Image 1 (cartoon, rainbow, N blue to C red):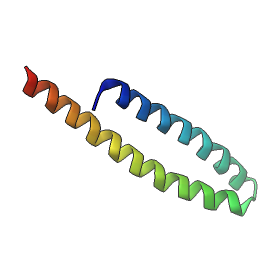
Image 2: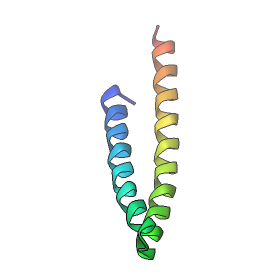
Image 3: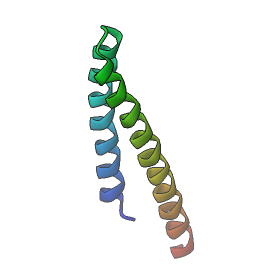
Length: 67
């Protein structure tokens, strides 16, 4: 995975966190539907973070093997 792809994945995660933050705030103010969206977003965030972690490990291994 290239560094551009890794940076793009990181930017996607930051955008997702911003969206989740809005729903968490709404849920704290009593909006139950926002709580459902926030929990779904957190599950998605967990998956995307795992994908990014794997991608960075693969990129590091690739750079080491090319040396």
